[in-house]
Image 1 (cartoon, helix red, strand yellow):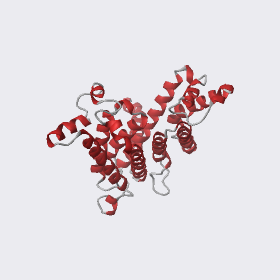
Image 2: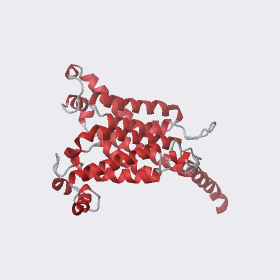
Image 3: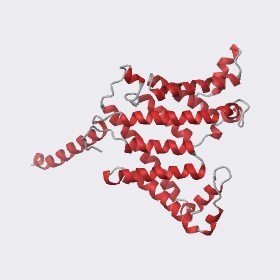
Image 4: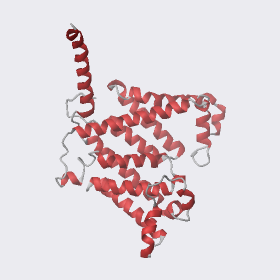
Length: 310
């Protein structure tokens, strides 16, 4: 009798395990991951071009934030420019040349990553160089640097070079659907859901995101505001609506970007949110990177023609 009663439970468990296994490991095309690699590399190369003239101010020993001040906030064991200069000093290589040399390595590795040439090695070099620059200029980094570092780390193990790459042209990659491509895509998707949900919930705990003050303060900051929005003080309801819409898009992301009926529209709403941030606040690199992540995770299909999997 006990065996008969346990059969439905066992069947339900098997169905759940099968569904979970298919969700995480069913073979998927590496196309979205290849687009992720190309988008990430292109954005970081453009960012590198923008800061190329200010390397010593951002990363130099005697830059805006000097190395001894930064060192106290860096966890032990994390590589930094100081390590490189310590190795180069006996060879007569100056701190400034170390900064320039590391930056050239960073740009070169990003270029190889963009083209998909020796993709994993290029990703490893780009990630390590980015870590060293990021912790050295820790006081001046912001969201784009954090997500760029995460993205480069993902490129170390995700099959991002399987398509649209020189590795594929050289026969080092097949471009075939794989379980690793599916798992990688799920990691990227779930990570984005956690990020937006956490960001939205944190915003929702503050009064300024309900009374419109948050958008007012952001648009009126001298270092971020691109236009004169002083007139917004005369239309407080508009500021509130913009804040409420931001909360809705971010908190709703984890719930409405999965169903097929709402996925496209929620992804486009999120991309539109970041486009607004880029235009109104000048945060072009951050906005482009976040828009690219959503586009690659949820708008570029990883399925073969006729496959209806999510």
